Length: 432
Ligand code: EPZ
Image (tube, rainbow, N blue to C red; front, side, top):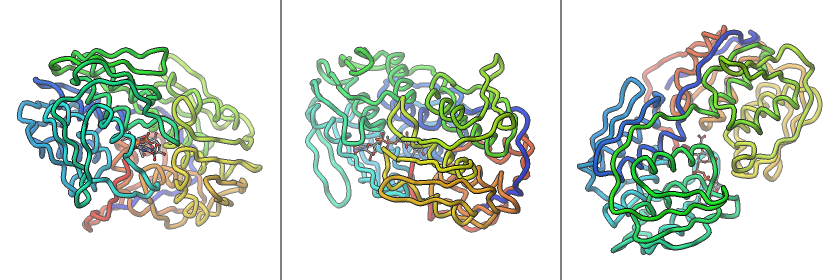
């Protein structure tokens, strides 16, 4: 199990390039299964989760080549309609293969993903969507089995209590591309990663219209062809580097950030007192100009503030003078990082889906434990500013979603190193 050791206190300076988006890449990979010919996906980040998804597609009969930030997926051998527990437990996003299985093979047997470190994560909306399209759903020995003679288009609402679902929208939209007739999905997720998938599907020959930005109309076609696509950059990685620059009072240039997708995040940073200048080369983030002020953050679906940056902002706010408040609207239990930040000296109280953060003068380095991907990122952000040394255990979470994290930080002047030892990291719990 690798660990990351950080000697904190150095302001970040220099340039960093943002990689392709993990959460856009994963559904694109599943979508490639819908085609009758190979797809090429470019600007793919080198990540453990992409590797897991590649293994998942191979186990279904597809041929997958992955290297040099590129994927070539040949779906012509796709013939297996079962994704077993061993695959799904490693990564929840493997549930994305269910839509393509139903559309192409008329049957899907996928192990039901269990809970994970960010809380209970049901898949009822995915199943509801498949049922609306005519599938029969059963649960057997921990597996969901969906079967259908022919998927048929229908009009229905797919939003749930916590708003729209990224995963359900992607999964059901993929199934609908090959259904008979027209499907209208009200209340779809509008995250940039979902829009990216819809663009890829259209390039493959799917007929998709976004109606007034609020509904999707998908007219089923007989077959789809492979497509060539370049993945958009990772807005969560960009936001993580913004908080790292801010907390260290640094001055960095972030290249290849999709700032158009980051309005809520940029707005909050400005409110705190971080200077952000959109320039030709990228976005410059300066934490050394103004005093910082506390703020209130409510996470919600896009274009709201992303839950995947909540932990990193909590780290930042823990050293902002005054009282800040974070309300988690998507995963009410996604606060495991708070206890670790408290070990570093933060003053945080968590109560029923909210965290009150009283800014402290400084954090102190400590040995801490990463519980999930974004919690790990928050601990890195905190460690960069803390006095003394922070030792982060279980960094395999970081390798699932951040490409070359410590190398990028080193280039920005941070004193960060990875300690590698040979213990297996099989304790990993799927959170993607
Ligand atoms: C995606 O997960 C991301 N994962 C998550 O990123 C991200 O936190 C999440 O969207 C929210 O933005 C990938 O893209 C691979 P949802 P997903 O379905 O699709 C509830 C990271 O760190 N819900 O949009 O699983 C659900 O419990 C990861 O990169 C249902 O009730 O999220 C949540 O409250 C972690 N029933 C809300 O909807 C369902 O059937 C949004 O979840 C599905 C979801």
